[in-house]
Length: 618
Image (cartoon, rainbow, N blue to C red; front, side, top):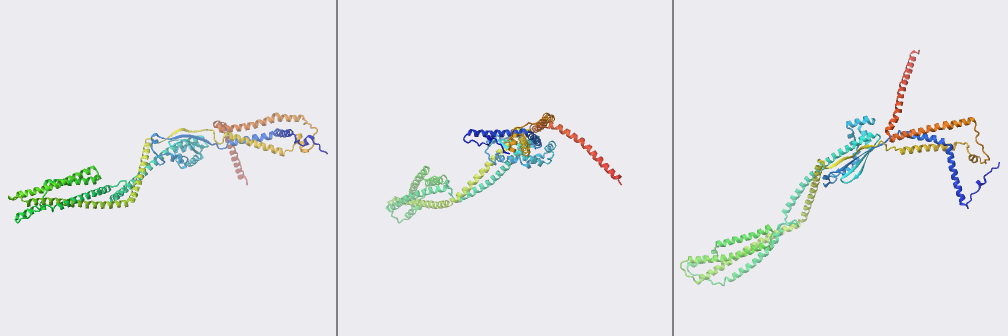
């Protein structure tokens, strides 16, 4: 038998005409869509029944998925204005250290266990909520696993903190979250007070130890300075200034010594040129010569007063140089030196006058004795000798002063050299003292800061906590969500319906259309005849169309609607859901109670009859 083909279907495509090719593509798409619609029309019940059953099953299964509810509360931590003005760090009352450990402190299982161990709270949790959790640690582990902390606002002096607790019971979550917040606030305030107290005690103890170290180092440094003068280059002692003054004094004394030696040599040179008295043979002459010797030069009270005044001037000069550090260039020292020079001249003149007066008195005491040229010469020689003697004494005294000053200069130079040699050691000791003082100042500063923070905290002017929002819990669970349940149910139903349609298409060999005949047999169809409907077939079709199909559609719609409504109510209207399922549960419980006693009675009677039969049997 020759196969007949449609010439239009077997013609190759015209590549020269793009519009014809695009029309063929559009036609293929239309045929594909028509085929899909045909399959859905033919297999609609194959798709709808699994779809509705799977969707309803998914909704029902969602009722048994554990609900997770979130309770939220907000509280703030702020520093009182008194505390804001105090310099603080992590160790002196700042909240930054507690902020880093906030999440761990709130979710600490041990702390939560101590909180739940309160009898009133534990009894309330056992009676009103989950009776399976009987131990405080079990509740603490549940709370610790569901607690979450976040900062709504964060600054050095103010924090807004939100606590969230996720649990299966919204009422329990609300109750426990309030307790967690209050427990954290109480424990944190106590920890802050204890930490500050311990820190203050530590700093005070360290400050006392540093104080002892500073005092010991200061004593050692002072003893070292007293042992070696002039160690500090910034604050030299008066010894160095005194050394400069002594050097200036030495120069002045040497100049003065040179002047007096010159005068003494001049007096000595002038002494031989004076007329010499010829001694007589009488004993009087010998007595007079003895009386007019140098030892006869006796000072008067005026001369002694001038000498004492001169000594006082020299003492004043030495006192000003040693105590006040004055030099020879100071106006007051120069004034005293001019006064000393005047007194020295007055003493010399007074000594000459006293000698002359003593000589005159001795002459007056002699018997009537005429003044001879020899006596006049003797008087002149005696006066010159007295002046030479005074100059010699002054020169000797000045030389002694020079020797004393030179010895003192030598001592001070040795002290200066020793000071220069030990300045490095002094600098090291001084640096140790400064470091110890700095450490002492730091410890005292920290102790003072902590003391002021503690004082502010004792008067409720420290770190303050305030509840902004009490614990609130929405009765709409965060898991599972309605959109998630709906999406999963539709995907499950659609997937199962699609799989059933594909399976029916693969395994169903029934020919329903002309195209299936053409594709399956490869033969052209000349004419087709519709199904011949009989009365029984029409009755059967009407029964299916007006009774079975509406009933099945209603049952499927009711199952999907009921299960979906229950899923919605369990997620968004928990109260209505509890009321909706309360009646079926009560009916089921009643029926169970009615069935259970009759079943037990039947079992008992059967067991009794069995025992009777055993007793009567031989």
